[in-house]
Image (tube, rainbow, N blue to C red; front, side):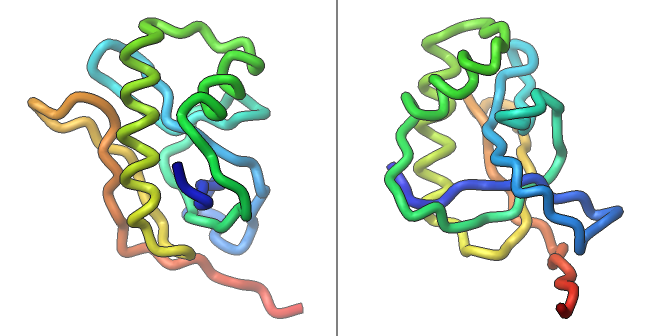
Length: 122
């Protein structure tokens, strides 16, 4: 469990943050991607934010199911979400990450990018 989560990050519009939370989702037997928990759109990058409450793999799973996503394998998704949250707990807030599926690794793997969000001055 962790108090961090990811929101959508678009490098083409780095100053525009939608605030939509994303979760890893098993796109195929060997492929994972970020999916919007409201829009159901697949996203490549996520921006680490603090949410203020503990999030478990069951919380993310419930959001995915509530969003009417077809789950390929429940056990695989739950174990992948647990592994993902263990990695999220070690992420630095404000950094941009992407998901990678490496050969021999089961589940999603967070990879930090060199991208930095651009903030608009108000």
